[in-house]
Image 1 (cartoon, one colour):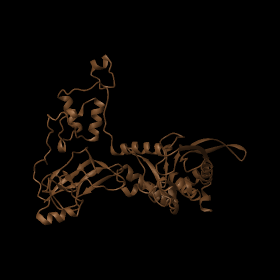
Image 2 (cartoon, rainbow, N blue to C red; image 1 turned 30 degrees about the vertical axis):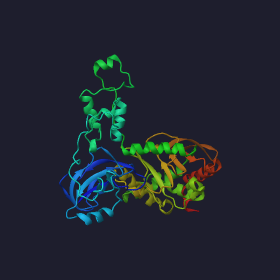
Image 3 (cartoon, rainbow, N blue to C red; image 1 turned 120 degrees about the horizontal axis):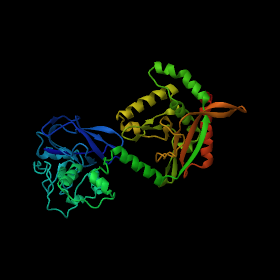
Image 4 (tube, one colour; image 1 turned 90 degrees about the vertical axis):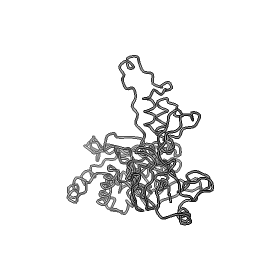
Length: 428
């Protein structure tokens, strides 16, 4: 039986992925559970395992190509499964509709849905040049590239699966003298004469597309309000310096972030509105009694927000361990979907790179995000006298539909008190 395995829905609202690496090729035998392909999705890079044992007949998509959930990934020949057994095998998976092309897991043609599929159509074939009036099949990256270059993508011959146009096809189209529409950038005569490269193209990664989509979603769905403040943290600096070496001996780097996370969790427990979510469909606010704080991590591929769970129940040492572990996983692209789920509040520590104040964008549907600026040494008034202090800038953005200004001020005052006097965290 020929079995077509579609890119599965792996949760968290993912609707497409980019092929990062193929582990199999045509003619290779696989067992159920063997990894077939490594996919870069919106949030993680993950291996997709084979659901069946058999021989790979065809693979769909090249490295770098974007595949939608529900689109074919591989075709597997399952030996010894024919007739009624094939019907039973298919019915274990998604339902099959007659006459609908590739549906669920089986190639369908008229009423012969359960006949073994032939080889025709599984090799990558160029699209017919005569179909100029058709709407071209194309990867999202290729479609965007054609738009940028001013190329009518319907005139490009596709060599991808089912005649899909890829970025390579567009490049080949140009090399063969394909025409472009007028460019939006008007080059000077000197540039044209020198042959200078005017633009550079880089396909959007899944992570970058997700960041763009999430930022727009947040701005469109939340009423952002931001408040800025500062806290003098000389005592926190002293405590960190005192315990930094002891933590290092246990293999844990101690930064200021674990103290901030601990203070946040305790402050959130006193101000439940900032640890909530607006549920307009049911006309209610959902107050969360657990404190899972997301940390915005800057990676080469873009910003990701893994979550540290149950921060209120962890010691500073345990939080420091989790921060080190999750930052390492983020940088090495080893985060899983579980690492990204169920955040209730977010922290972004841009001060580690530079900058004092910012207007952080809420990690929707959460209602708050705290920005941490660069710790600076500056003059302060202490006990009525001018003194040298260590000042930490804070930028808090909230969803003003849920959180009022007074509540923001009270929350920040409590957080500032904890950071100014860290011992107070264990005195309540």
